[in-house]
Image (cartoon, rainbow, N blue to C red; front, side, top):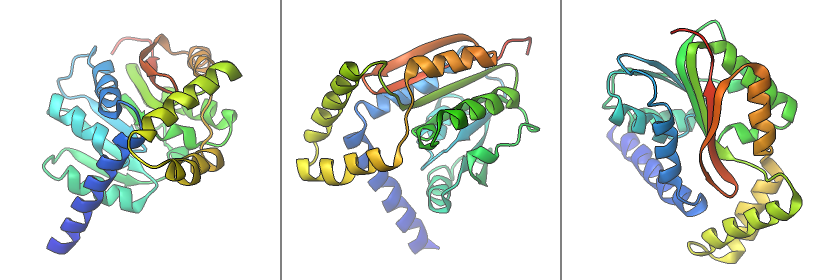
Amino acid sequence: MKGLSHDFEGEAEEFDKVISKIVPFYYQMIDALVTSISSTPFSRKKILDLGCGTGNVSKRILQRYPHCSITCMDKSKNMIEVARFKLSPYPQIRFVLADFLHLDSSEQYDIIVSSLALHHLVTDNEKRWLYKIIYETLKLNGLFYNADFVLASNENLQNIYMNKWQKHMGKNMPQSKIENKILSKYYEEDRPAELIAQLNWLSEIGFTNIDVMWKYYNFAVYGGRKPGKA
């Protein structure tokens, strides 16, 4: 078990090292996500972290709000195990190995968060459907915030977004890696949606107090509240 723990520690460290080289102001973005949910009393809130990855968001939440409980959901067994290792000091965490498309709205949460995950959904219809399930899964007065890749509202702005992103990565890695690995994977696998469109979807579904908490070109933190009395 000791060797296994060291493996997970190495993977967590490597992920944390690489992600900040790819995502501009990554930790600032995560802090903005955690700050976004601070407008509600935090006595013993029940939180769902969709696509938890290695557990960075959940760890930041627990460091700030140690009395809440969190369900970490991810479809990657390895990510779950790395998160389990990283979050081992916190007993109030439940880990669920599942695709968030299989989210069960019968279990209710005070807060739902996600980071760098929902852009993997292939179509806009899938994204809108998931936002609806998230809405149904929230308790009244519950909050949802997402930190993710977004698209601009027109091609000219999107080109600026991509240039700024590549400039950031160029400070940390060779151009060949950016083009052949990062961007190649982005264009093949990632399907971000326009930020404005997503804000409209949230409104149509019923979310209120919708806002963009943080933004840096093609990365944003946004969300809203399910109306009603807690």
